[in-house]
Image 1 (cartoon, rainbow, N blue to C red):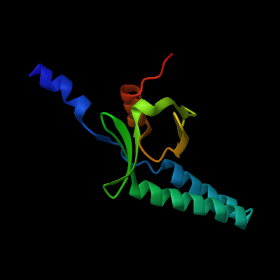
Image 2 (tube, rainbow, N blue to C red):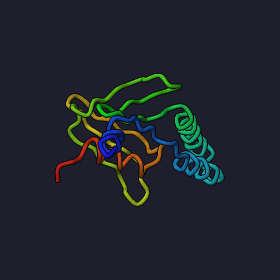
Image 3 (cartoon, rainbow, N blue to C red):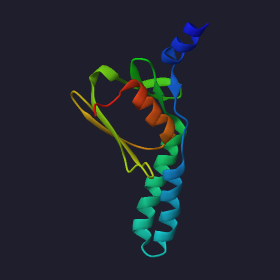
Length: 130
């Protein structure tokens, strides 16, 4: 029974819950900014609305071998951990940006998912060298 408990978590897929903090913050800021500059406020509101749509539709899934980016249950892109060189979450007090580098490319994603689960999955599947 102990063996099942220790092997089960490593073979499961973990899907990150959505987080609307950044899109909502951008929209509220856009409303306030629109009182000063309508064009700048409108541009920021569009970015906020785009991130709301992305938060609703995009999911990150950590599998035992790769990070999957999914939309409506369909895998859009798979990033095998074996290709990862480094990762970082920018501004730890309020995480806003997730960066990871593969052998051939660099990726930046806004934190539109649960940052605590993201960090624990990254530490589990892609531990960084200190």
